[in-house]
Image 1 (tube, rainbow, N blue to C red):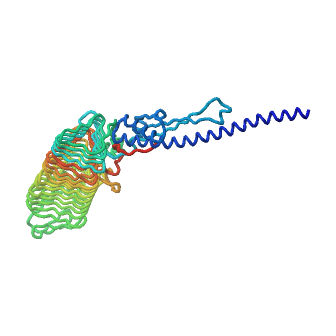
Image 2 (cartoon, rainbow, N blue to C red):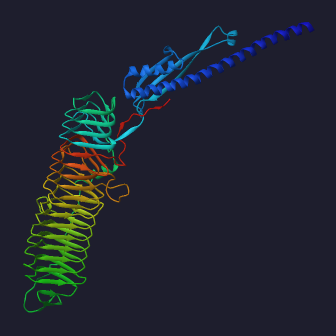
Image 3 (cartoon, one colour):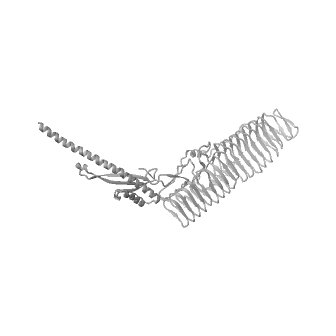
Length: 593
């Protein structure tokens, strides 16, 4: 029995020894495979990065394959063990990538005691992006079917820190130049007529053509591409569009019928509604108080009611040649039109003001102190130095029954101070006139804004339910302004423009948006205009045209249009900080797996 037990132990020990030897063998040879895999991964990474860099210089799949294989061969890997694949549309953030797979075998020695296999296979994968970083686009033609970006007539576009992008073609002709960080066209990029493009990268979808005497300087990339609308879905713009066509209607308060009040030269004292006035020189002085007047006629004299008063007029105001109406602080309600001419004037102190349609001419003037103003009609100012000044407060202007809220003839002027502004009709000015708006969160203009004189815009949004036009010169200036249009933008005729959009720290307007309209009518800058525009001109459905020696520049100028046609003038594009979502691919590569 003892001998039988010893034999059993010997058999068990033999089998156990075989198992221990097998485990040791597999451990050694798995370790050898792991070491080889680490080595292969380094080679695959180097091959993928090298191939990607070569592709950026010359976008060719043949070069992609040969470069990856050459790097692998130099590290002792046969081309038979290398697979190179160009991955188009790799992910939502990487449009193109290169995949390199390296395989090899690990020989078995000790493990063959337990297996008939002589080796086992190891495989590694490396993926490198072909375009992983981006350049923001500051001049964008969104149309996928029209002409894209077209330059001619010696136009110069300078965009050193951003891209010029088109969802169709880029055409540079007639001695024109683009100097930019990048250009990108979804279709052809063509340069002819002694023109040139200089950029870090020139990306095109189908063909890059360069005529004799022209040039393209920079890395050229052929690849599918498109540029998105950076303001599509912008919440602030969506809210602004809804205000087009709205306005604040002026009100006409109920006033007492009152009594007629007519001034004369004799006697030199008179009593009206219990208050005695005195004539000194050509001025009648009445004490402060409440005056309820039916028809007021100053003849050619001056009526002065200083101090705090409450004045109403139910029927009419007549001020004779050279006459004046001077009323101190307090509410004034004139439920009738006011027509002044012949050098006459009306001055109202601070207070709530209601008045009918205002018509000025012949060098006459109106001055109103601080306080809300309702004009139940239009403001019509003829030339000859006629002028109107409105103090700070909320202003609501009606119209003349023909859709005109404000009309200024040559040589006239109108100045509004800070406060909400609403005009229920068009605003038109003639050459030699001037109009000035104060600061407000919103300026509502329910009609066209047609400026042919000088204009100054206080900070805020201008919601214009019509077109914005200036065709006969003058100057336009304003800071921290946004113009929301229902119609077209047309600035020509030698106009000098200096307008800047709100910045991130501004209290008014839409950050970095200067002009925005959804019209399909062409947007035009031309006729020698000298434009300093800081902000985005957003006309996504409109063909933007600049010609006739016009020029545009600004601290942050972006143009987003259906198509962009520039001729005979310089343009400079720079990126606006808040609008960097639309980008063109640049030439950096990186490992992503």
